[in-house]
Image 1 (spheres, one colour):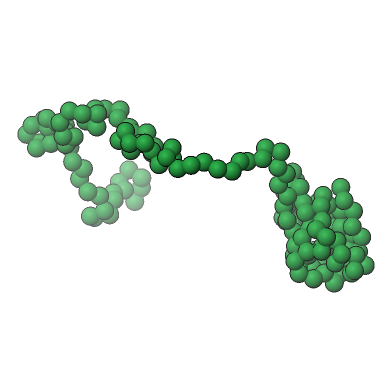
Image 2: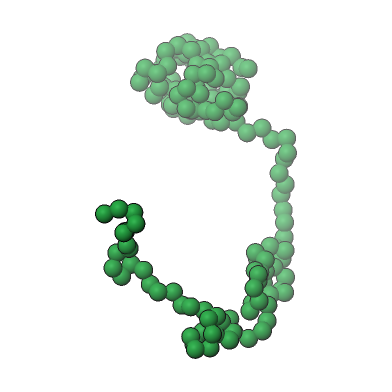
Length: 149
């Protein structure tokens, strides 16, 4: 067997309709497109959301709210996640951006915020962009140090 004599499995391929190949084919004349109108022409495509001239839903529904262009998006990391990394031996005593990136908890351009979910038993010196009040209290209660970038 080689590339030049490969064939598809029996019954896996249907013979296509030969459209617009003369009247004798049974699919000539209008080529199964019906008569006249925009849809019978080549190159036809209707716009997304077009409802036949009726006011489209996207324009009928009232708009509300706004998007703040100055919003800063933070990558949240819970204390329980940090504790699990300590338990697995991936973190020893300091936590900074480089360590979080190597452990795939954040990307290099992310702003990082430590969240207070879970409990932290290890003494860690953490240096990131933001902390919640509960996270800060939990880290200091465990004997750790909090440094904001």
